[in-house]
Image (cartoon, rainbow, N blue to C red):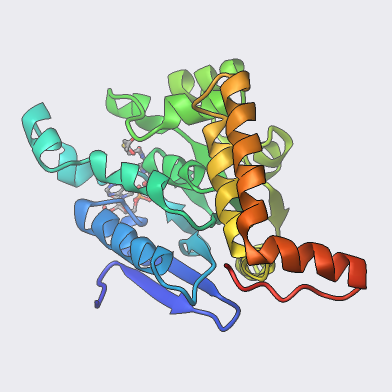
Amino acid sequence: MTYENIVVEYSVQGVGVVKLNQPRTFNALSGPMMDEIMAALEAMDADQAIRCMVLTGTNRVFAAGADIKEMSEASPAEMINKAFIARWDRLRHLNKPLIAAVSGYALGGGCELAMACDMIVASESAVFGQPEINLGVMPGAGGTQRLIRTVGKALAMEMCLNDRRLTAIEAERVGLVNKVFPVESYLQEAINLAAQIAARAPLAIRLIKETVNMALETPLSAGLAYERNNFYMLFSTQDQKEGMAAFLDKRSADWKGE
Ligand code: CAA
């Protein structure tokens, strides 16, 4: 498939990189842009050669939110029929880990897109915010729900109600961002992190992602039961036998993903 709004790269280390590439519109997340992002990520998710994915933008902007031009005259029916936000839900069904590498603006849908990833690596210039209130609307792709689970109610309220923006350092301090690097190296650092994860036991990685995310959906007792069952289930894999044998033999494990 050829893409007009994104650039797709595959590394030899099992890492797939999707780069948002419409700097003229500050990577506004139009319908076609979101369709391409989802198609590329889903293709990587289905590709045996890829084990971890990175979603990034330019150094100046990760994404400045949903495309305001596209939606300014829309009716609710058009938003529903075009699946304006519904297509974003497909992000939740990716099995492989997805790391956002964020530099510059991550605003509105851009902040929500980063938060829908499993981890965020940021450059020192990254800015996170939910400025939808300035447009007379509110976050619609997860901002109110994911911020409160990450940065807590007080800051989530301030960000959504009063366009409080977080610098990269603030975002790291409150737990929104995993690590901050200089602009020159943040993308390579995100790819390095992805390569480390890509080199690990694939089935365990898949179940860890699923189980950590399940914690957001369940009460503790159900989450603990889900975790225990997945832990026991991994004892049916060759990788569990190999991993434990390698530890006892004092050698590196050779993961098969089986
Ligand atoms: N949609 C469409 N176009 C956008 C855009 C967006 N979200 N953000 C920026 N652009 C376009 C501008 O219209 C402008 O285009 P032209 O050159 O054709 O006029 C170009 O990108 C550059 O923008 P600015 O001139 O404003 O550049 P700046 O450096 O002064 O400011 C900015 C950059 C702070 C990102 C500013 O553009 C801005 O505030 N953008 C809007 C951010 C926003 O409100 N996002 C929320 C969108 S709603 C949403 O996301 C809902 C949801 O929950 C899914």
